[in-house]
Amino acid sequence: MSNNKAGRPGLDDKILNQAISLWKQHDKSVSKAALSLGMSYATFYHRLNKAFDKMEEGDQEEFDIKPPFDPEEPVEKTVERMLENYKNNKRAKDERDLMPIKVTHDKPICIVFMGDPHIGNPGMNIESFMDDVQIIRNTDGMKVINLGDTADSWIGNLCKLYASSPITVNQTWKLVEFFLGKEHGLGDDFLVAISGNHDLWHSSYGDILEWIKEPKTIYEEWAASLDIQFSNDASCKIHAAHDHPGRSQYAANFGQTKAAMFMSKYDIIAGGHTHTWATSTFEQPGHDRVCHTIRARGYKHFDHYGKRLGYEEMQYGQSICCVIDPRAESRIDFITTFPSVKTAADFLNYKRSKL
Image (tube, rainbow, N blue to C red; front, side, top):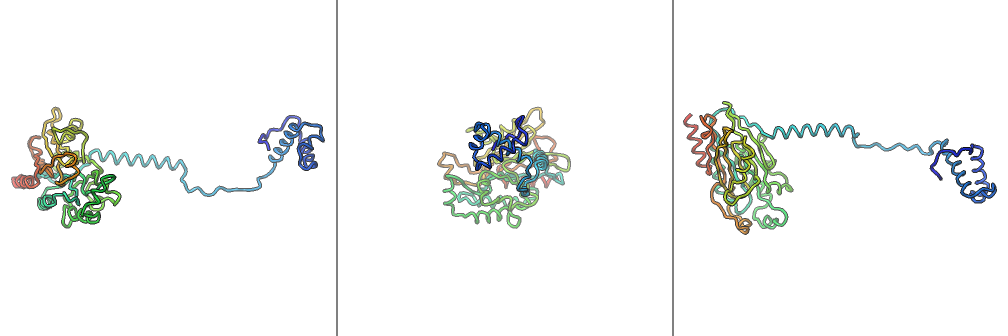
């Protein structure tokens, strides 16, 4: 029937009721009812529709249907929640722009920028790694910022490299716990953990670093901005990342040096990832700052994948160390860089013995 509810002028209730009666009398045949009135089929059909529409207007609904409960929150609450989430996310981002790490004294310390360990890889120089871990554990004032790729892992077409490894995923987790945990490894000396691409690839098995890190260890994905604050108000600003954009065949730390040009507030910019090492020290005019740019080589010494791509294997600079002296009288003496954990530890002990 027609959905038009408006009555046609001149069609009162009596005429409309008559149309329905005639339709019923003629066995609900529109053509017969129209013929009895000497009316065209279309005109009577239209009148009959109007009659039924008029009836429907006065009828009550036959079914009273109540919609079921909608578990979704009202849209107004969703908007409020999104506003609150944005506020919290912005606060988290703002606080990560430069995270303060307070040192309760003004004695020299050493930050060890630990290059990619690749724990579990057959090409990892585990002897060198164990030696460095023991030196750090037994030297007061040495703390580690791990530059990523703590565990070895592969994805996609490279999975065959991981599948052929003699070290299983479970064994890799146990090794990470052994070297980085409190009982045998770095424990509280593990100051900052940064995830690299291999750590992210490993996420299908869970997050090793999240699982093993100490409660006060800062854990960030790919990069962290830090402000080491000493009790005498000296401050060392650090930007540590798994890698920084930019490559050059003439400088292994080109990405870090390039970053320093755009991030002049940092004293140290450190990265890893490429299994090469280099350090540079230069003054930034107008900022009263001497910047140290660092790339640490890491502990994966034998890399068939890298060799196939033509990369040269370096032997030193697995971790790069920065001894920071908050009592230094000039910026040039504030930070001293070493590509050897042992040499840095000796220098730190010497500096502390002179206090």
